[in-house]
Length: 153
Image (cartoon, rainbow, N blue to C red; front, side):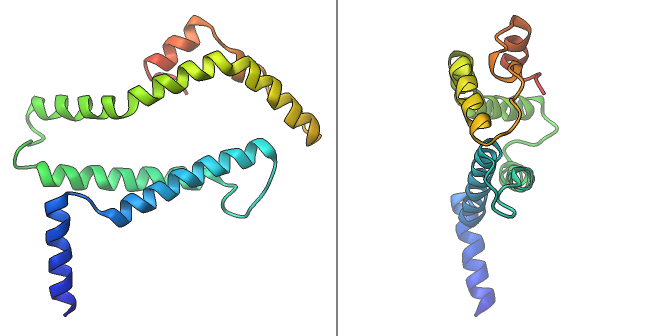
């Protein structure tokens, strides 16, 4: 019975090329990172949730597994030895990540001064020392180019 169900499950995965439970777990890891960073900003603490680095590790681990899984499904059509495969891979990754990243980068640059003012209010309310203003106010060409080319951090 279990083998039959597992075979059916494996067939459905190969047909759809998705593992929904891992996609869902990856979404939860992303939410964990978001909530964890909000907790860092506000000073609230919930055990484990207020540690966003664990959520980042989980998200990256699942993403790596899913990338290899999808590569295995496409291995016949796109062997990794061919340069075209690498070009397709990096093109897909770029257009999956870059558009939203550039929108958020523009918003961060535009709203940085306002966000820093809010950050000071939060720090004063929580009796914490102020964050360095460079984190919110660095609109230098060097910083912008580093972010546009993904060379920051």
